[in-house]
Amino acid sequence: MRALLLNPGPVTLSERVRKALTGPDLCHREPEFAGLQNHIRERLLKVYGLDPKRYAVALLTGSGTAAMEAMVASLVPEDGSLLVIENGAYGERLSKIAEIHGIPTIPIKFEWGGRIDTQRLKLALDEHEAVSCLAVVHHETSTGRLNDLAPVARLCAERGIRLLVDGVSSFGAEDLRFDEWNLAAVAAAANKCLHGVPGAAFVIVRRDALPDDKERKRTLYLDLSTYCREQDRGGTPFTQSVQCFYALAEALSEFEEQGGWRARHDKYAALAKQTRDGLIKLGINSLLPEGASSVVLNAYLLPKGVTYQKLHDHLKSHGFVIYSGQGRLAQSIFRISTMGEITAADVDRLLAAFKALGA
Image (tube, rainbow, N blue to C red):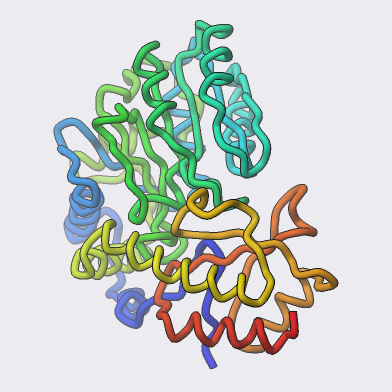
């Protein structure tokens, strides 16, 4: 029995993506690699119909956190400051990244899983008029909350603030309006909604947000200007994970054939509803009200008298891997994502396994 991954990445792969990992050995300095890299960059821009003259893709070898760090370290000006919206673990991670790089950081904290209070945000921006950038998580997977970016974008546009988005767990399945929301950059990864493998990450950045090469750099390996300049030329500044790129190219082909981000959104939504409805019938309630979560992941309250470890081990024995809560929610919730090669029949089996637990 294969174990289905219901954690928020890495995902259960399709056979064609798994087979793509066995592509031929390839040097990252050869023209064949340049062709592969260019192909991926073009396809990533097509996911949301972006103009390559306005936007660039920086392809990195690393996890989604590498993309987050590259975005923050590269795009906040040397004399700038960053306001970070925190309503979960990954908002807090954005603040930690900025602080490590010595960037003046103003965190605005909301309850984990809570909505962004636009009025509070407005007051914070009024108080800190010198803020040059704002960072926010689109889909906060620590709770499942899908943050509403539209009002945040409006406030940033009114003040000329660059909006930096952690789209690691939303890119490819949720609506990202790059032009309408005037997004300066979105960080993402291959092994989430695109159904690739861990090891390939990327930042889609507005070209006019890239710093001048004369500006002092905070990072060598993760500098977005360097990646965009070299990759526009067909090169790459450092050794890339070639096999992960093969898998990403194949995953993007599969993604397009299946109808793109809207089709993936609808598939996830149907599977999430099937899971949610089934668990409610078993007396297991969700952490957030209906409509507050992304279609990618939902968080649920642990059944009374059942520890996460007991639930995890029981489901794993039936072929499913779920995810625990984080931080202050570690002992009270579990999380289920329906990304990857998962079907409605798989969800039926999952619900049967929950029923067998006697929860």
